[in-house]
Length: 286
View (cartoon, rainbow, N blue to C red):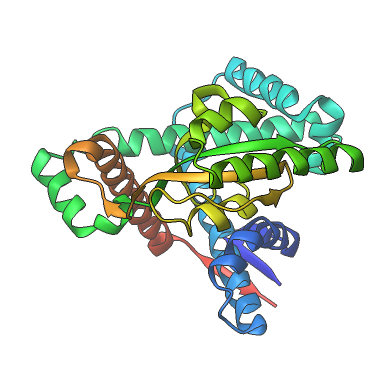
């Protein structure tokens, strides 16, 4: 399949590359769809993305501000550094032609400058605008459940060390049952005794899964039995739990304003692309 955009040819290979770029995020977000439907929709979205980029590139080249050669060279050298050298850059771009890479960079810079110009005069959201946006999108400002936890930990290095570590943890556990304070045992037994073993507040996804499976099922003041993670043996104590909540506006004002500004920017760009589409000649050739 070939797509023609104002006489410019978009080969199937460009659509395939866009599909591979989008695939990981797309398949995760739409895993509930049938595989054939996912593939068809992914292809459609990828084609539309490529068409939009071509429309922007064409307009920027014709109407946008000129990009100085120095800016292109600077961007090229930055890419070389980021890619770990010229050869890696050429591999990523599937070409040995540096001039072609620089031409692509120039086009991208032209589009970036076009979009900056397009969004430059967008009005700043008022406080009322931000407050309304916050009220309409409160779920975006949710704080996850948090627990404040401390632990006694013995790290493990090999089978022999594993046995010794478990023996020491068993002694700590026995002393806990006899009434010794948890904090005193941290200082006596733990490989990480700083701050009394206090890890502060943690949220799910912050620690290894084996640790979280234990501590998020403890009550306030409760101490776990000995358990194992990839880092060693632990005994954990939960000091406090905070349920998931919506952050108040005053604490996320800057975040809300930034999201609203980004939404308005996206809407302005989408409107501009729709205008370009309405005036473009786009043909799909089987």
